[in-house]
Image (cartoon, rainbow, N blue to C red; front, side):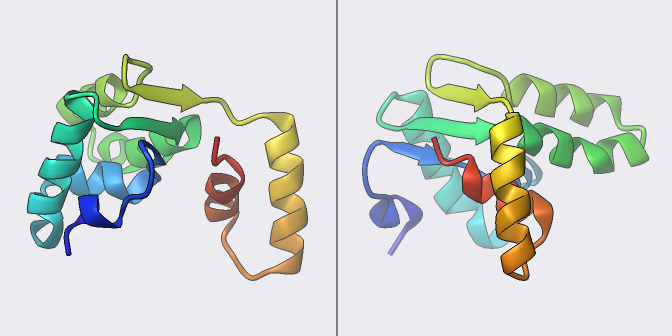
Length: 117
């Protein structure tokens, strides 16, 4: 079963790992992610992600002073016809802190959880 078979609906949320795996060509997922991004490019799927995804993916390129990778991520994770990048609102942060206080999850993961469009 491929990734497209597991997707329900035509609008999906992509967190940080998907962006990293797609750009860096993570071997176990190359075929699935290629199909996923082709579906997005063709307009079969629309995507939502958080500005938090951009912040998280840029850490390693900043550490490595890799300007090309910084530029690529900035270009990829920006609003386009089939991609909506949503800001992290104050309300999302408050709800994430409340959830984080009650369960054992990292704050960025909780923020992504709260940002599902």
